[in-house]
Length: 403
Image (cartoon, rainbow, N blue to C red; front, side, top):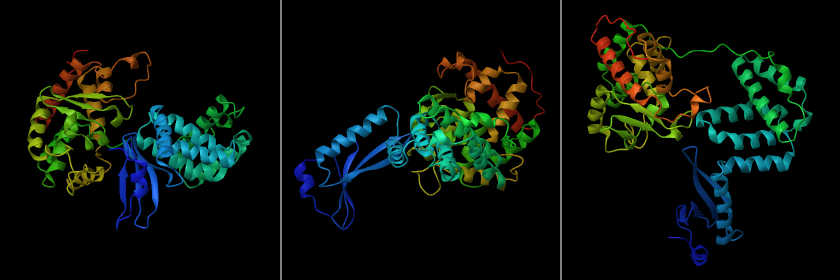
């Protein structure tokens, strides 16, 4: 029920902080000491966030609603109000500084990124870039200044971080140029000056016999039953660990043999369909008897309100005797990609099932159901193939898949 001006005025504090809710995420927070704060609760990028709108009585109920509506307009346009506020604050204090433009750039474009990527980019900016060039007018930063800042990162052995910092700076400068705040992108002059660090591929087993050993070890795992089911599920669907960990029962349709992952959980922000082989459906029917009353397929051992952690599954792999050089949780994707290509399935089917970014912009316009029937057949063949490896058969991949 919406608040009234009288309710807000007459509300009294209690021994603990209490909240009086209005509409659209707006609420009044009353502290035990009597302070009254207007706040708005909202979701951005799949995460719940809160923002302060000021104190009562300086901010009346009517004014608080106006401020709430302004913030929701930003959300409608795909901008995080918290990031927009930070950008505005920096801009007011530092004019056309690098930090002000960088935060503006981040607020504008980060809504299309995965949350983990957003955190890495902002962390890099705040830790390695803003302390050195953040307060400088962006139009006055020179190539030598930028190089000096990047060399500092290199000097501590963080070659890949330096490379990515240069890339992010280049994006900010390019945004400044296109918006008329700078005339030149000094990062362009550093092409080749900051080589990329050695890319470390996630460990994955790809030898069929070793894969069979892994599958049998998983079946014999004696730890938390949810972890065993997660490990059995992972090779059958080969999604990203975060997508598997946060899988919810309302996303799974066992009758249709499909798991539809919402766009906000996907790295590429596009709904992804995972066809479920018969073995996978049977596995989930068993699991549903154990965790189906909760939200997550694979809840934490401590509470059903949270999913298992990535470290929990990784630790299970180590307890089974697989080293970090041999196998990682993410390695189930590499394992499937390698063996499916060897079996002979069309690369486009495999890439679509891996939910990789489509580099060809014409082909990218196809929806999430692209090659769906072909992928259904592929996933069933894959599950049958894993059963053969688990049984210890000497299976030789055959180039028999339809292209």
